[in-house]
Image (cartoon, rainbow, N blue to C red; front, side, top):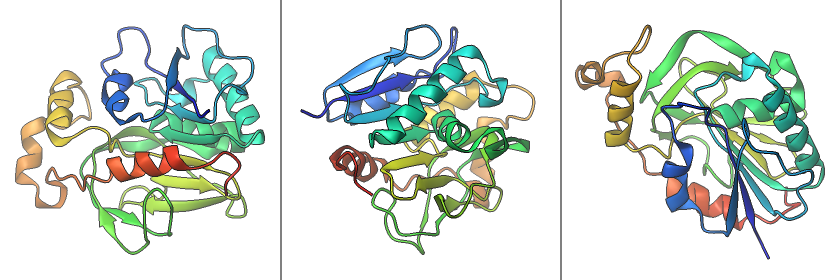
Length: 232
C-alpha cells in the first residue's frame, strides 16, 4: 500500500507552517517527521512517496539535521522512491545529490508573482511553452545542475532554475510556493516584514508582478501521488 513521508523542515518559532498548507493536498496515508527535532527514519522501505517541505532556514547553514536529511534523500533516491521537494526541499535535494555548489545565495531575494516559464514537458508541471504563476519567496537558489543528470523544468526572468527533475528517477524539486494562495501569501508578507522584503501593498501597483495564481497545485499534487516508485 502506498504511504507518504512528509518531511517537515519548519524550525522552532518558524513563521511558515508547511503542513497547514500541504495537508489538504495529501491523498495518500502519511506520517510526519519534523527534520530538525525528530529522529529521521533509518530507512524508507515503509514509504512509496516522500514530500520535503519548505522552511525559513537556509540550506546553506549545513547543520547536523540538514546533513542527516541529505543522507535520507540519497538513500531514498537510490531506492526509487517518488520524491518532491518544495522551496527549501527543492534546494536540499539539489545539494544532497550534486553537492554544495548546486545551491547559492541570491544577490537579492525573489519575492512575489513573476512569470514562471515552463521550458520542458513534465508529468507534474505540464507541457513546455506555457507561463504559469504562483507565489515565490526565496533567498537561495538552485544552480549549475549537471544537464546529463537533471532537467531544468521552469525558470523566471530572475532565476534560471525554479524546478527540476532528476533524469531516470521520479524525483522533482519545485521552488515556487504553489501551495500558498494569493490571500495567504499577502498575509505571510505582513508576518515576515524586514530588510529586502517588499510590503504587501507594493504588489498592487506592479503590473509585471501583480498577484496571480494559475491554480496548478491540485493537478501537480495529484500527478505526484499517482506516480509509481521506480518510474522515470
